[in-house]
Structure formats: structure tokens, C-alpha cells
Length: 497
Image (cartoon, rainbow, N blue to C red; front, side, top):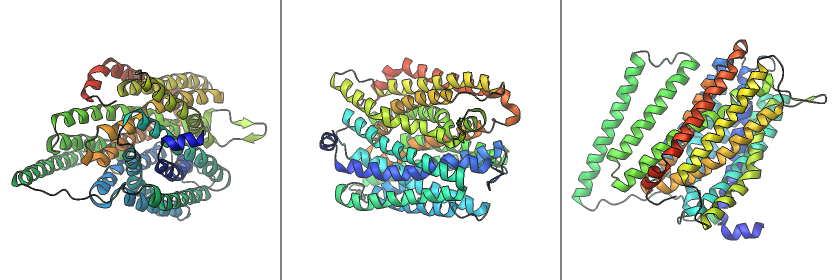
């Protein structure tokens, strides 16, 4: 079985698989205990209230993905993907080492900042190289991204298990330190594997020569329009700040302001690409499709990323976790997702190839729709769980297990397919930047997830069912809308599936 897979896929895929696995070990392991550490006031945590802690959690997880946009730009224009991955991994490791030092809030926030900056460099560029391995595109590339996705989730499973246990049961900072070890192992894999199996991929970009006066004039015009759009964005954000629409004095206000900034940056960036990007009409249509998928992904992640926020709080406060005399760490509930991924990712990867060979492979908009509907159904189950929890009883862990199963199946329909689609639809000269935009959607989703969890105050338990119901309605509604318009969206994709 293994040899068959190796013949079908280049070995470079497995280098990227293991490098990403260890990077995700560090990220998801630390994320599993971050909100618990922020809320803890007994074992050396920061002792923040739910709203403040959840806002900081949302800001951090949003920053990790938002910084993918400048990370993609640096790779496209200066470093190349391989150097961006290498330097990003080093910064991530240093960030986790800083977090392992119990030296006060300022040092802690410095560590979070370093991890966010490093991940912004690494995350979009490692996915771009996966796309480079499959220039022919098609279902084989989708299958490769599903295999790559297994590496992400294997790392997630190991990270949550190890870091979650060390952090909750022994010492928070020991857990953060274990995440640094995971990133170090990822750097070793990438350093030695890329030199042999990724030659010619992800190199420092060459500057395209400007051969004619017309090309120079066109480039100058595009730059002028681009600068104008950037100026409009800066003016817009300044007006929001001066009018008090953005309040940067509290973590909650900063998180809300960050949401406005993320939406603004995304909007103006897409405007820049469409107006000043020098695209053909066909390319503009494809970028239009990427905008629709961006909105769908942001909504999906705003629900899915409740795993580390509201669902984490629900697991910790309202779910039965006792096995005999042993109390299971609540962070381990987050392991349902990577566990289900490892089971179902190869199944769905094979299913897409099987259906493609019979010309029955669902189009990308349909897969996105299925993902959103499954997400909504998962929150429908949480509505029932919350209705039981408000009575004061601990609910069965089967509620969370069922929710994570549906969310995982939804993720497999949307996320690896979305990664692959962005590499296929993006104009070649903007591929890493648009991969960055894909992760900006994740950033926005994470921020919303953090702000949403701030409503889960122990004094307002009664509102839990209605909060979960809101996510159920929005996710299923957008999923059905996407399904309704899948044909014109597919047409704009220009034959790319």
C-alpha cells in the first residue's frame, strides 16, 4: 500500500507532510491550552474573565493567519517559499521558547507575537509548494492536499495530547516548551528533505524584465492605482478610529477593531488585484470566485474554530469527563477532530479520485456547500447539548463527539479542496499572496470564534442554546445559498474544478 502511494505522489509531498506535521504539533498543542491558561487563576494562569481571555485568544489565532498575507508577499517578491518556510519555523520555535519562560505578561505576549509572525511566513508558503508539485492540477492534486492535510492533523493530534496533558496536568509553561521541541523537529525534516526532494521549487523569484515602454507605463499606472487604494484603506481606518467605531483600549475592543481591519484589508486587497493587478477578464472572473470562497471559508472557520473557544469552555464546564477516578483533560476533546481526520481523510481523498474517474466528482462550490451544511448540523447537535447543560447537569461526551464528527467531515469537504482550488484559480504571479488571503479567511473566522466565546460567561449560561442556534442558522443558510448558485460559480471558474 505504501509503495503504491509513493509511486503516485512525489517524495517532496512527504517532506512537506512531516514538516507541516511538526509545525502543527507546536501550533495546535499550544492553542489547546491557551484559553485555559488565560482563564486559570489557580495553577499559575493569567486569571482573566471569559470575555477578556476569549478576545485575546481570538486576537492571537486571528493574527497567526492574518500575517499569512505579508508572509505570502515576502515569498513572492523577496525570499521565495523555501526560505520563508525556514525563517518562519525558526521564529515560531523562538516564540514557543519565550512562552515557556514564566516571566510575566509582557514576555508572554512577546512569545505569542513571535509565533504569529513565524506562522505567517511558513503557513501559506508550504501549501504553495504542495501546489507546485502538481502543475497538472486535477483530482490528483486534490488527493495530494488531502494527504498533506493528514500531516496537519496527525501533528494536531499529537500536539493536543502531549502539550494538553503537560499544560493542564503538570505546568502550563512546560506545555509551551514542548511545542518548541515539535517545531525544532519540523525544521530538521524540512532542512534535510527539501535540499534533496524539492530542488527547483519555492526558490527566490526572478524579476520579470520590462521590455517595452508600454509595459513600463502600464506598470506605473497599476502602481498608482494600487497606492490610491492603499491610501483609501488607511483613510477609512483612520476615520473609524477618530469616530470611536474602533476602540483599542481593551482586548475586546481591540478584537472588534481587528475584525473591521481584517475585512477592510481583504476588501481593498481584492480591489487592488481586480483593478490594478493587470489581470485578463478570465483571471478577474476566477478572482471573483475566490472572493465567494473567501466569504464561505470565513463563515465556516468562525464556526469550526469554536473548538478552541466556546466548545473548549463547554467541554471544561458542562461535559462529563470522569473515567473511573480519573478526570480527563478537557483539552483532549479537541483531539476528536484530528482523530476523525486521520480516519476519513484517505477515504474522501480516494472518493474524489473515484468520482473524477467516472466524471461524477462534485464541483468545488458543491463541496463548499456540503461543508457549511455539515458545520451547521454539528451546531444543531450543540443546541440540544446546551439545552441539557442549562439545567445544571453535566452532559454526555457523545454530544461533542458527534459535533466534531460532522465538523470534521465538513472540513474535509471544504478545507483541502479550498487550498487546492486557490492554487489552481490564483493568477500565477499572485499565488502565494492569494494563499495568504485564504488564510486571512481563517484569521477572520478565528477572531469571530474568540469574540463569540466571550459570551460564554458562567453567569449567563441560559443563553448558550440561542448562541449555538445562531451558528446553526447562518452556516446552513449560506451553504444552501451556495448550492443554489453553484452553476454560475462553476462557469466563472473557466473549466477548472
